[in-house]
Length: 339
Image (tube, rainbow, N blue to C red; front, side, top):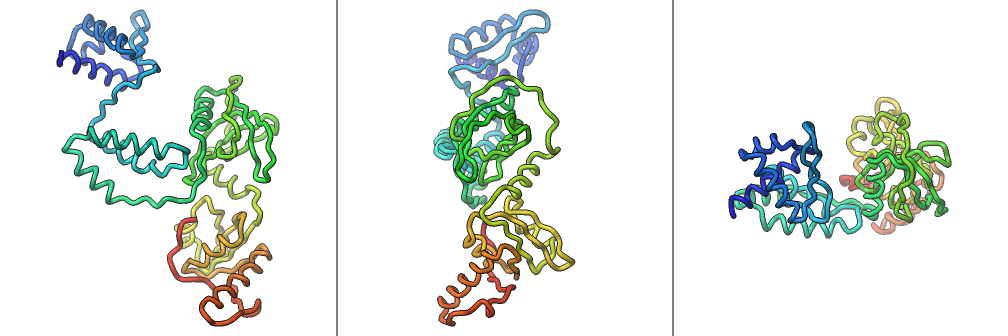
């Protein structure tokens, strides 16, 4: 019985390893006869695992999708990779995934071989992930979009724009991009007859699959870079231009791509162009840097900087300043925090 059970687990592992196996190939790999392979395939089917068989010389066996999840047989490196991955995903922006990953990690830790526990513990405690502010999304929406991308099917869903207006969209989905803070969908909008990027957290209904579509030429070779540019150009309450007293090379390592675009302004200065929905947050963020800066645009941001500067002076007991007393290059000294 033990030998048969071990052979069934080996057969399941092989079926997961490759999309399709021929009977002779499985028999050779398992060092058994083809008759034994057929008998073991039948036993797995009685246990509820859907295994498809195609006849003919070129036919073979394929593990299909079913109601049960087959046991995963992982080697040492694979088990460690899955465990570390689950640890990182506990802070996922996908709704419910963090809790599910904790449950899955608990199960995995219980069955980790003793030889792997010290390695996993070392990796787990040596790596710290700073959780950034993120907008949760419905995993069912992500799953529906991912399936539509794979099957090349258009989808319909309700979507809320940045100004709160809701509308029904029919799009041809091409790629999901995770920026760390939000999920974005790159798709061709049929009603607009143009390419669009959609924030997945603004989808107000689960996308419904429709007809298949013929793939179009992509709007850019790198869709992740395309999303970054789209985020930078997206409508915001305030379009800001900040001039840093530092060269471009220094700013590139400190400004996340999702924040905005950088461009050199001479040899020793850099311009940041970014959109913000708030004035206080970017001012506090920039003031925490060890770099002097000037607010070039908008005027409302400069006026707000004067108010904030006055409040900080009052907090230190140095009195109330005025617009003339606020130097354009005033800034703090601590290291920057995440956006």
